[in-house]
Length: 55
Image (cartoon, rainbow, N blue to C red):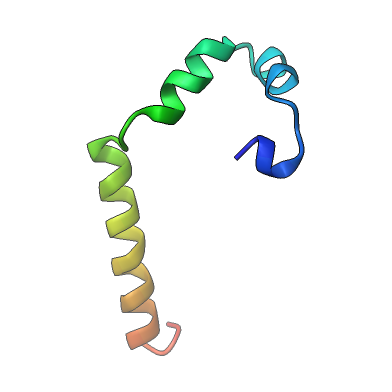
């Protein structure tokens, strides 16, 4: 995502105070249960909002 926005990974890691190796390790991990639930819940909220005609 960082590279997709044209920001060098090295610079982003320095600004965010994280290691480059940690950044790359996190990128290769599977999504956490919390992240999966967040995506699911966001979809549910969008469906409810659409069903209620935006209310």
